[in-house]
Amino acid sequence: MSKVHPRDVDRIVETIRPLLAGKPPELQGAVLADLLAMFIAGHHPGLREEILTLHIAAVRELVPPNEAIIMDRRGGKPPGWEPS
Image 1: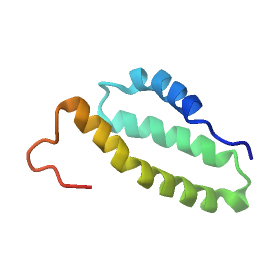
Image 2: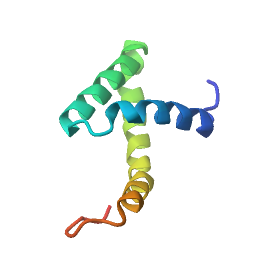
Image 3: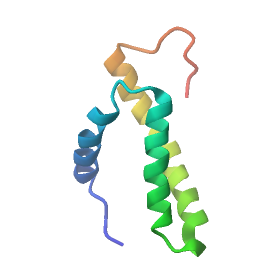
Image 4: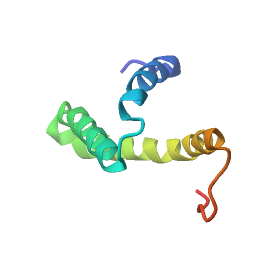
């Protein structure tokens, strides 16, 4: 398996971000779910549960740093925002 370079990830994320920006959360979630389903479907059926578990673990790790970036852009957390 090839190593993932953060600059490659950033480049693709920055390409996709404008397509999702400002769209309702339900639409954003549906698009991301469809993309994830395509990703999982591309793996052997016997590996899909493991791949999904690993992917969700990676997402959980990425939530706090992404929350910090988003809140910094917004000028801080809104009142009542629960800590992550």
